[in-house]
Amino acid sequence: MRPQKEILEIMQVFAKQNPNPQCELNFHNPYTLLVAVMLSAQSTDKGVNKATEKLFQIADTPQKMLALGEEKLKTHIKTIGLFNNKAKNIITMSRQLIDDFGGTVPEDRDTLTTLAGVGRKTANVVMNVWRHQPTLAVDTHVMRIAHRLDFSRGKTPLEIENDLMKVLPSEMVVNTNHWLVLFGRYICKAQKPLCGECPIYDYCQCDDKQQK
Image 1 (spheres, rainbow, N blue to C red):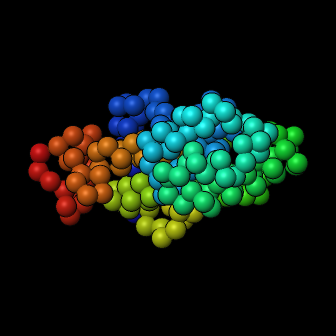
Image 2: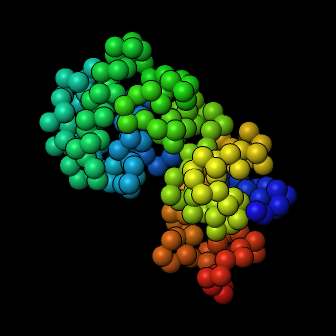
Image 3: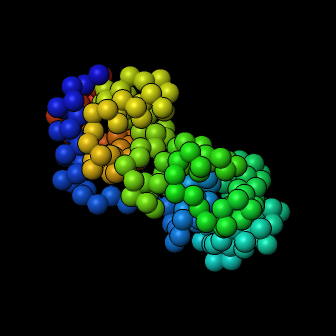
């Protein structure tokens, strides 16, 4: 695993380049954020945003989502992978919010993960993006980049999350997920990394590193 000093130096480069990174999912309240993150599993943010553009105009609360119903919800999200299971979870989750939490999205991770279809990663995203809490969601981008940069050798998202949380100050953790996701999405791509545009080129020790 790379020394903490170097990890912090790399994160400082990301911070200087993009001091205020933003989630690329479209939402306008905690509930629509939660739904969007649930839909984003194994799907692109772009695809989710396209599907939710009209959906959130008519169903942006748990009550409105239940009124819409599972079958009509499916017609809005049918372009998204695993839409049948996601629709079922969103309806169940919406009912839980109404029955158990007065229609309000919980603020802590343990409670969030009691909702249907909501795992640790989804809960971390909601807490980070909406509540600005120092949580770290390890998705496929974060896992791949953490391994490529030798930030962690963990084999599970939780192991990688724990490794990063040990070495990063809380004020940096708030933006770390966005920095790593955006870096993996647009620069250090899985198939064709854009090494010539890499802001941390000098720190990279990957075997497939290309010459500038």
